Length: 155
Image (cartoon, rainbow, N blue to C red; front, side, top):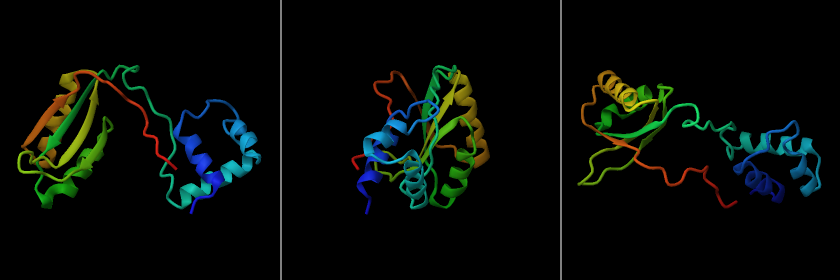
């Protein structure tokens, strides 16, 4: 069970953590604990699997990666792990997710590919297809982005 302090820390970490020398200072003051306690609790949360990792989120469009393609793949059951491992090794693939299929949509592996151009995204897809042997896929290029935020969970 999470303590009140741990819940508050998780809520805090889901937002934009201040980019300053002492990012936990205000949180510690609000919770009436010292900053070291915040750090210790974060370590416990990580050790116990509540936090997988912490890091910055790069604004990929701002650095020139203007194109995104959700590529969906029809991967036979026996090739899923191999194909997913190949896809996950690409630095410009941010998501690689297995989903259930339905009769009208046979695609089970989803990859989100980022590139400077559509050609660059297509090149990654062609390479991945050649390496994995998977030939059945659909490319779904982003036309417009309506929302992009980190998920927030109720703790």
